[in-house]
Image 1 (cartoon, rainbow, N blue to C red):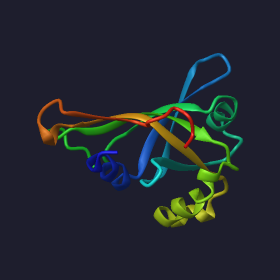
Image 2 (image 1 turned 60 degrees about the vertical axis):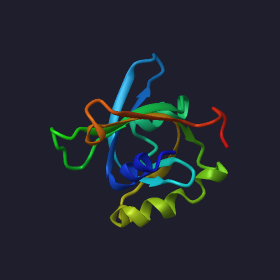
Image 3 (image 1 turned 90 degrees about the horizontal axis):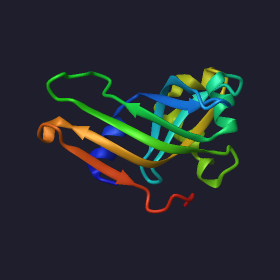
Image 4 (image 1 turned 90 degrees about the vertical axis):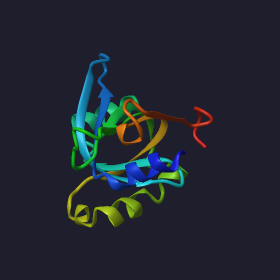
Length: 145
């Protein structure tokens, strides 16, 4: 993954993630995130009884956006991503809680599970590199690595 993309994601604290319900209707939620740059994993914490968690358990395919914590309208930056939420027992999800709590230590006191999104594809818009500049990344295989 391009280092600019990875650094941008690692510096942010929130994402909007969209799931699909059983009828295929989109449902979005906002969450605090952490990022595992080694495996391109986006981590968030949520209770399993939320609407979005129930949707994910039925269909693990998600999409979302990550915007800077501080918006600068003259230097637009942001990520659009697609990914797959991994099962809690997936080997790539084993380190998720430790990574998430390292970035969000207060979250230890909040009930819920740390979820792992394996990023599959993303587009990074970065107007600081020139108006309309977009950097793309896609996982080499669509299967879990």
